[in-house]
Length: 130
Ligand SMILES: [Zn+2]
Image 1 (cartoon, rainbow, N blue to C red):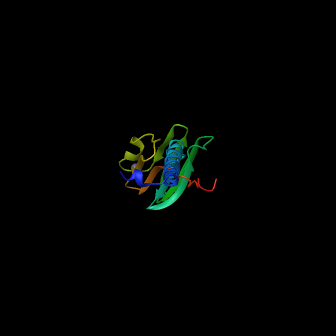
Image 2 (cartoon, helix red, strand yellow; image 1 turned 90 degrees about the horizontal axis):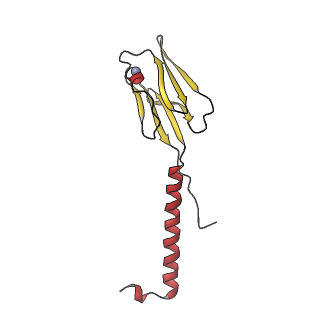
Image 3 (tube, rainbow, N blue to C red; image 1 turned 180 degrees about the vertical axis):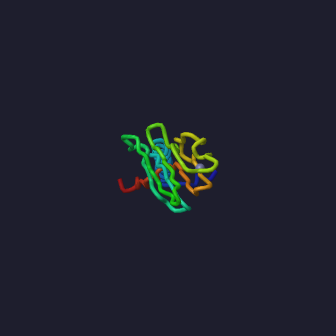
């Protein structure tokens, strides 16, 4: 048994490290649960806009002019995000409907528009210094 060879102080230290580790991961999970959702809109592979869905007070419509008379209207409200109107041959983006979960996305291939919901970065918490 390796534990028997440890001094009292060592075991205490080990316990502290363990507890700190557990509470650190516990906090991480807590943050994950309350993570804010952000809809990231990208056009042609470039980020166009970010909408924080948790801080959204009113319904927000993002009209993106895609040139050549083409456009896409994206609506964000408390239900999620969806494409309300678009000039698009297949309209798959409209048919996708509302997305509201982290990891979900709407893709408009013909217009090269993508809407993706991501969870906010988990802030690093320095427990040792507190
Ligand atoms: Zn489309």
